[in-house]
Image 1 (cartoon, rainbow, N blue to C red):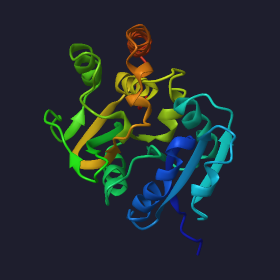
Image 2 (cartoon, helix red, strand yellow):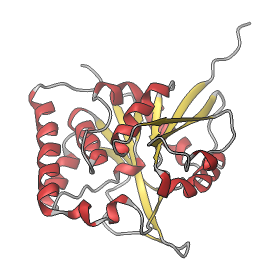
Image 3 (tube, helix red, strand yellow):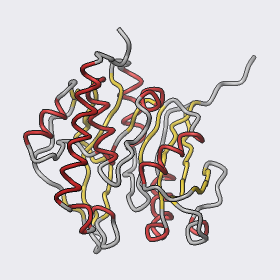
Image 4 (cartoon, one colour):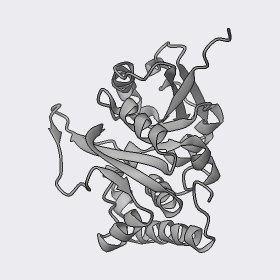
Length: 255
């Protein structure tokens, strides 16, 4: 009798020196996940840089792969990390964030049950410096996110999506087909989310799927992130990519 094949969910994390001290907490949240029989997780931690500051925070665990590369931003780090993924699904986890128990299993169950769903997102709570969490009203209903729903909402609401790209759980083949994350200095995860929604139905879980840490060093808190000229350029190319995907009429899964 042949041995049972173990299937994997790969968790991809981009990290740089300032966020490295949060890695142990991210790892602890991974260790508190449970998956169905026959499934396991693999954590790929990709440093956006070649220094010595990150490695001491990476746990010594055979389920963890650590790689380094020349700096190019989180989108570049995540995309090159795909070279070390080998599972059917990819879950995003930023170095400074945490997963609540059950998050991986819930998203996995959704995509395993319906092969017309290409990706899943979930409710996120801000994790404040004092350890408290804050939620926000306006999340969509629990259930499918139809094609174009994210782009329509995003364009009507000052380029803010109704689902959080940092909660993304996605089929690996679809992620690769879209080329990974966009080559942008920021909003690369939003660009991927809109591209996914242009070609595939998604899912939103109203249960909390991420604790999104708020701290002074995070990239979205820097002044450069809200520079009006750069932000306008980022949003323009994000939208243009999503609309171009619609124009070529490519869909996932193929008809």
